[in-house]
Length: 176
Image (cartoon, rainbow, N blue to C red):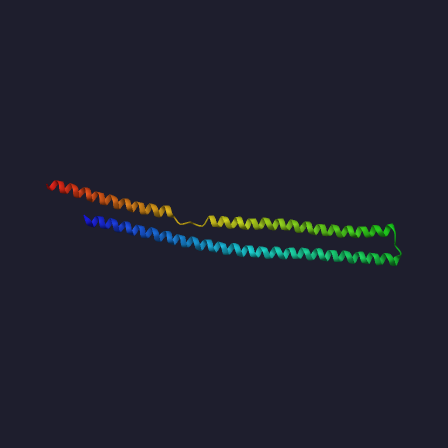
């Protein structure tokens, strides 16, 4: 009779140890997956930041080149105007058109830069959302399954113990 209780107790102990070991293994795997996702997100974010900075530098350089080209064109226009004797209304129109073209070019470049910055922000948000989605798909430890395994083994132990106790009580009453 004691052997059945001992076996049930040992079964309970083994179940508790196995469930605990399973939860520990799942926790370790979850932590590794979380850290891998952290590294992945960080690498993607760094690459994105570097690309955005490079793009912004390129746009600033383009704006500077456009401004410089416009200043050169206006200077050449003034030189040509003074050499040819062009003055007054005609010269003013050419000068205004040159300044207008410069402003239009720079405004276009700036609008493109702002549009690309909005696009970059949306891409950054997408990176973040994708990372959160990958994180949510990482399997968490199965605490409920471990608890149910332990509870089942505990019920088996209790049932076995009660059967043996009630069986011992029945056999003791039949002897008298």
